[in-house]
Image 1 (cartoon, protein in one colour):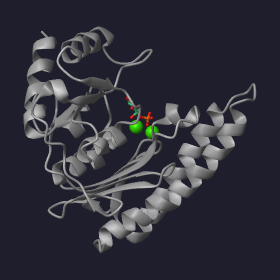
Image 2 (cartoon, rainbow, N blue to C red):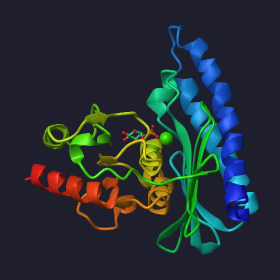
Image 3 (tube, helix red, strand yellow):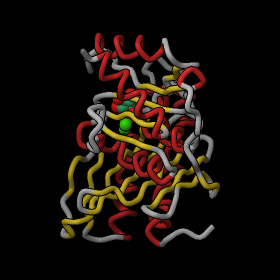
Image 4 (tube, rainbow, N blue to C red):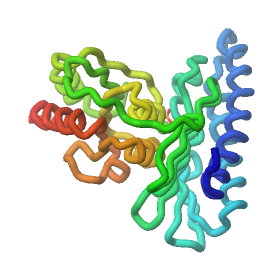
Length: 264
Ligand code: IPD
Ligand code: CA
Ligand code: CA
């Protein structure tokens, strides 16, 4: 499958950083049993992966800005383009040796996300999307699921943990949704959750209080797979607000209505 030069740059960077994370995952399996535990090691793994991504992406596209979870904003001379990068999404899974984590790279031009790559090095699943050119999983074209009965749908979510988010609001939303769907899932890596919606594995997904690097790449994957994604207020602001809801057009609309009613 032939992709653009831009996608090749993103994929190459993701694969190199992915090899590093995969080696580190092997180490974690050893550290898991030690008293000290792997927490410090993981935060190093995270930073190392981000530096690799920064090096490769800025070498290939000098001047682009870079927003990474670990290093924050690094201004570029080209004010129109910004990489939005999570070097390790699903840290808690990674820390526990659960193979559901990913590198997420989005590219923003002006205010629009124009390309995205999400890569899970544990199972070698590589998701790619570029504006107007479709979304792919390991070269297979993606399409969101077509279900129109919520009671047949499996919906993903993210749940707030200790010290984060509005727990009561989440419980109200979850209660409202769990009464209407075939299943709820919490996989723990938002970029992959969004990729799963693009791949039709999940019929929909919602989560609050995410960051731009959790959503940027997944947003274009979903759009290029024919799905709908927005902020929880229904506007096109998921990346900036961190609140996201998505699915096919129908599921997205239904989830939005339920979330709106639950927030009252
Ligand atoms: C987290 C994951 C998780 C979501 C959290 C995110 P991190 O990212 O995407 O699924 O529920 O809110 O912060 O910290 O593992 O990069
Ligand atoms: Ca993340
Ligand atoms: Ca992260």
